[in-house]
Image 1 (cartoon, helix red, strand yellow):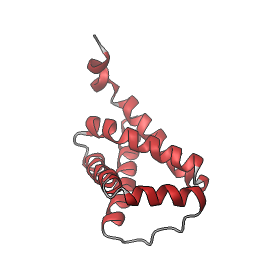
Image 2 (cartoon, rainbow, N blue to C red):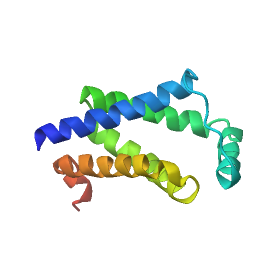
Image 3 (tube, helix red, strand yellow):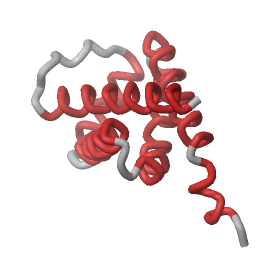
Image 4 (cartoon, rainbow, N blue to C red):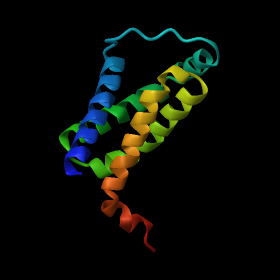
Length: 124
């Protein structure tokens, strides 16, 4: 189980690093969007701070997952972002749903594996 944890942690970390680095350095062209997803994406870009903030959190959490340091904190920080990625893909861009679901399930798996670190948060 320890090897599975390391594999999932590193794969999620690499995915997050790739997504954030390609955003900041414009390494990949932005995919063509249509319909409601295009309107949603235009709103994110128009906010001027939300997308860079999310990508910065992705970068920091990706570094944390790859290096194995502060994974407990990174799991909690990235959870709302993975939930949003899952819902955006479910409702607006279903073609990306498999990757979004794997990212979310991997995040839940890591929370489960590091659950001992979270127990004090939920005890009175």
